[in-house]
Length: 204
Image 1 (cartoon, helix red, strand yellow):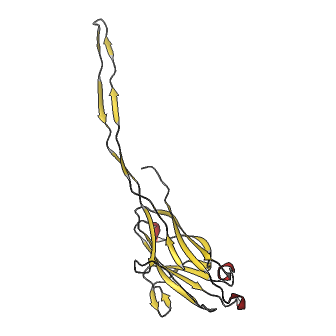
Image 2 (cartoon, one colour; image 1 turned 120 degrees about the vertical axis):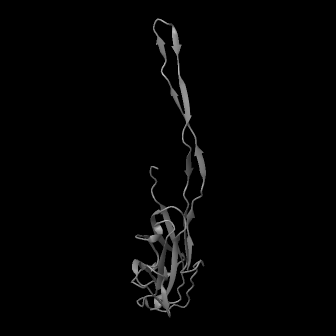
Image 3 (cartoon, rainbow, N blue to C red; image 1 turned 90 degrees about the vertical axis):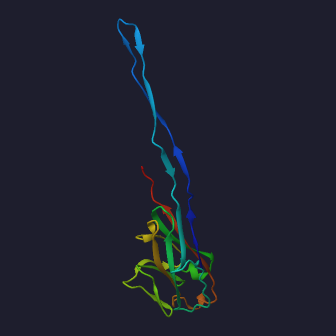
C-alpha cells in the first residue's frame, strides 16, 4: 500500500491602485459675467491582493517519513496497522477532507466487499502508543471509517481542516476469516489518497 497527497496553490500578490476625482460645481455670477470651476483629486488607499496556499501531507506517525506499507502472506484473522499524521501545512482552512482508497492491482481481496480486506480509520487526541502489534489511544479513539478497504468517504470533524493543524490517525487493514479457500493466492495493490477542498470564498 502507499499513500499519496494532494497539494495545490501558489502565492501571488498584486497591487490595485485607483484614483478618485472630485469635480466641483460650476457657477456663473449673474450680472458680472464671471465663471469659476473647481477640481481636486486623490489616490485611493493601496490594496494588496494575495492568494492562500493549500497543502496537505501524510507521514508516518510522529515523523516526516512518507508512508509506504507492505504486507505479504496475510492469513485470515491477520491485521496490519499504521499510525499516520495528516497535516494541513497550508495557510487556509479547508471545507472538507475526503479519503479515497482504490486498487491499483485488483483481486478478490478488494472486490469482495464482505470477505475481502477491511479498513478501519481512527483519530486520537494524542500520539498513538504501540504495544507489540497493537496501538492504543489515551482518552479513547474516535472512529472515522469502518468498512471495505476500497472506499470513498468524507471525513468530518478533523483538526486538519484548520490551517496549521494535524490529525493523528491510525489505519488498520484486517483480513476476515469468512472467505474460505477462494481467498488464497490473491494479491492487491492499494493506494490511499486524502483530498482537500478549500473553504468557500467570501467578501473581504
